[in-house]
Image (cartoon, rainbow, N blue to C red; front, side, top):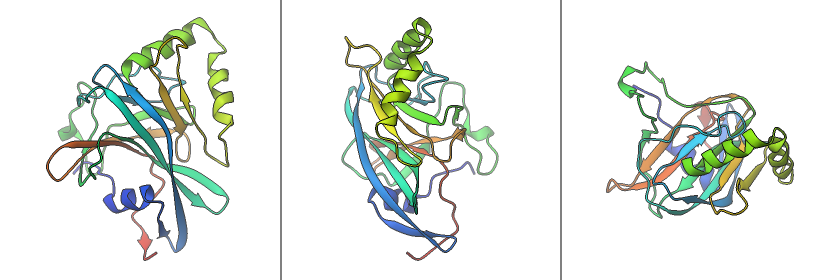
Length: 217
């Protein structure tokens, strides 16, 4: 069976709750970090510095503005983004389906296998593909453009996480919402959440901060 996120972990994380991991307490902070504009009917998740014009997920998403939040796991003075979420409705998700791009077949995965996006710059993001193309164009035009985004992310930095809501074209509303990626570089899966009635309600990226080894909080 392919990997699926832990529903309890997601619920605790986005409710700013607390749990024990390997006998140690983990406190969560949920922060809303922006409103993502979707105009094309699709979403993508990617490393904005390395793969800005990434392929969108095959799951259609209605056009609109959607809140983006991150669930930060606090290990003493060390803070890590455990999950990032696009809230697509007010209904809670009770089931999760792996977010796929064209050509990906989940039946080919081994036990606990997954498809995800690669991170090489310690940063992930959610974006409409239109905004991703705008970002790629800006990066092609200006070799130092990444430094501008990094400077803005530094304004929210705290050891060891940051985020930023970025518009790659000042004359347009399309935006990209960036955030630190868990422990750093890696490959991270995303999942679409559905309500009990089968309605689309969320997109979540799991940064593998938590294991299934836990105790009672």
